[in-house]
Image 1 (cartoon, rainbow, N blue to C red):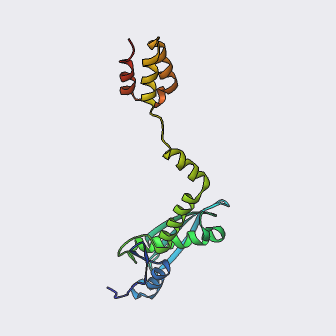
Image 2 (cartoon, one colour):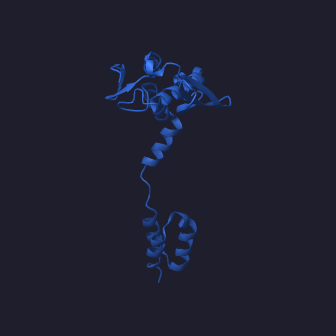
Length: 184
């Protein structure tokens, strides 16, 4: 077994091996002499890319594979280099499947950094912020509203019918049964 010491990148307190370190190790280790790294673009439609990387031994036998998917513009690097980024990620994952650089994680530092950047992009999206505010806003409890409406109505059967028509798809069977108790 090799005594190779992988350089790692600390991301949020966890160490990740970068893809270039995995490739360097693979190319320097004599046990991988004659082995190959082969990439294929399985999908490229102008806005997204799907790449597969296959690691073969000296006899051409498939030993490991890795896949990656990237969307153009989904991160800073993907604004201009989503195809290259996709290929690099697939190579890193295939080498990880081979067992290279996975002491702490299969994900490479590059993948983790991209994932964090994508999360921040989503958080920073004004539409997501608007939705978040709507979800955080106090929502009037449908059951409280329905009970109050039925109790205050003179024709409780008619009120019950109106409530179940308006909110029926949002109410459970148990809630509907509970509302029926207020109909006399």
